[in-house]
Length: 117
Image (tube, rainbow, N blue to C red; front, top):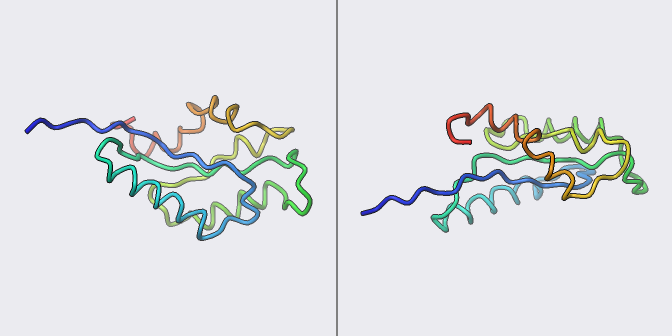
């Protein structure tokens, strides 16, 4: 039987996370389980990327508070982490721009799984 190497990937969720909820965290688990079930992918980690204060949404908590809440919520996760790059930008950043910084953003995940990424 030939063993097929699964494609390693990292899940990225961008949003306000105002606040982060159990459903946000559950989305990562559902996506990971589905992708693993295909037999084609190996999810190596997940990244939550809160939007910057420049997004301008009414009632949006400060990015530093949303980052702190997300870190607390994900504190026991062995595979999902918070990346602050997007939240530290002075203006709202399109998701595609956040994805372009992905090599920088995935550094926390890379440190957890260096042999696989």
